[in-house]
Image (cartoon, rainbow over all chains, first blue to last red; front, side):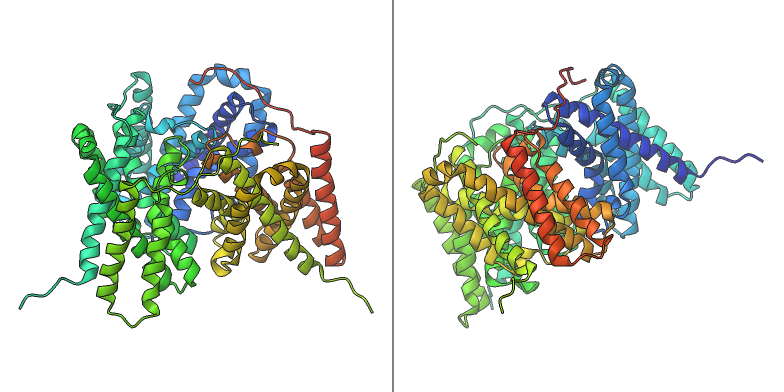
Amino acid sequence: MWTLPPSDTVLHLLSYVALTAQAMTAALAAGRRSMDWAGVCMLGCITALGGGTIRDVLLGHYPLVWVQNPFYLGLTAVAAFVTILIARLVHRLNLAFLVLDAIGLVVFTMAGCDVAMQVGASLTIVIVAGMITGCAGGVLRDILCNDVPLLFRSELYASVAVATGLFYTTTFGFSLNHEVWTALTFVFGLTLRLLAIRFKWEMPKFVFSGDPR
Amino acid sequence: MWTLPPSDTVLHLLSYVALTAQAMTAALAAGRRSMDWAGVCMLGCITALGGGTIRDVLLGHYPLVWVQNPFYLGLTAVAAFVTILIARLVHRLNLAFLVLDAIGLVVFTMAGCDVAMQVGASLTIVIVAGMITGCAGGVLRDILCNDVPLLFRSELYASVAVATGLFYTTTFGFSLNHEVWTALTFVFGLTLRLLAIRFKWEMPKFVFSGDPR
Amino acid sequence: MWTLPPSDTVLHLLSYVALTAQAMTAALAAGRRSMDWAGVCMLGCITALGGGTIRDVLLGHYPLVWVQNPFYLGLTAVAAFVTILIARLVHRLNLAFLVLDAIGLVVFTMAGCDVAMQVGASLTIVIVAGMITGCAGGVLRDILCNDVPLLFRSELYASVAVATGLFYTTTFGFSLNHEVWTALTFVFGLTLRLLAIRFKWEMPKFVFSGDPR
């Protein structure tokens, strides 16, 4: 008899794919700033693992994932390094990477919610932890590249994480099978993000030009 | 018989006012960078709650205030969001917000000193913890807005926090009523900051133009 | 009979020298941004102590060094302040400061490895902890000065830390005297860094000019 692999295994594999994709797009950002090879690898690690790290530091949830399992450091550093060799290809596969990044956003958000639930955080904090896990790595990348974080300015991204977290945490209100709900959340979040990219859904911007002080 | 409310309650209420004010001025800074609505709310939360968060992470003092009491997140996010609607008004009330921000500086500094005393830190660290609580949120705001932190360049701010902390911690040397001393510290710190704004008291600047390396 | 002082004492003294040197060069960076005196002192403290702080926060290793021993704060703040008075001299002694900074890189890397070994981290994490201790302070300095971190762009620095950490940790494979091995690591790391400066050894750069998105 054939059975589906458990959703946790699938999520685990997807998270590897997403970490790789985030490290690779961070490497392109590093290349735009002419960083050296070591800097490229570091920026890849920081971008891909930074969201989970900030979440764990804020929740006091030790040891950090990559401290316990340094394989993550190796994976993201290698992914960033390989990008140096195949930069043109990665750039041309822009669309594929947008999809992989969207997968990462959703998978990391769910993982962040899981961690916060484990430490018994309240519902609000569960959703915030999911959002931080999904988004904060990109904020670190932009700070290190000396940009105003894209997160604060571009299409729905943090909002997708929040919506995904909300959808995911309602699992407790219903007595649904965990596998089913995980899959539903994944499809919901990914669809939302891809629609946001496709139709350039953006939050309204707040443009204010008064002088400071 | 009429009694004064206990100073802790007053400080608590003042801290809500100050959190709101800091989130609102951060929202204006976000508007100057054309951030979207989600970014405005996030920058409001990070600016208002960032100082206490950095202090607690550095002292290993968990759980963080806003993790334990997510109401703070809601308050600052809503304050930032409302600012989008009334930006002109907030900008015109610049002076009132400077006063509210000064109240925040003093109240947060005292709260930071209290936390460090509770964990048994030494006198120096108590004052540093107060300063971090009062000032670090604004540093995070400026980093995320891609500016050199104002804190390092403008009128007495960190120095007011240090003076306030010094004044506050001497309470242990005297056998004064805690309420009285809290009130005195508040008046002292607020006066110092308002005088610094009014008369543009600045630290001397260190201007150095040698080439790096 | 004359004996050598134990290596730990020597390293301890060298680390004071290195902290002072890093605070002083950070003060020059602050001067290039026209920071005020308080900002100069803060940037000195953050640069000199930031690497160890980030390491300890990531490893959950509390209390932080400077919280337990605030003397470090005083030392680095005073060093930064004194730099304001003797900026020209410090700038002219550029070469000496490069050597002192290199000593700091090696000493801090070894200290970071020691801390990670004490908490029982794996070999990879020991080396990463050493690298963070040696390098992250400078990254914080560049972020606060609103620059793309030099670490990611200039001569071998992080790589020297990694090589030093690798060399240092192999001590466990051999049954060598700890003193001897510490001294050998110090000479190895320092030589590597000074050669990198002298001959402008750089990592290859990754220059990529594709548009984002």
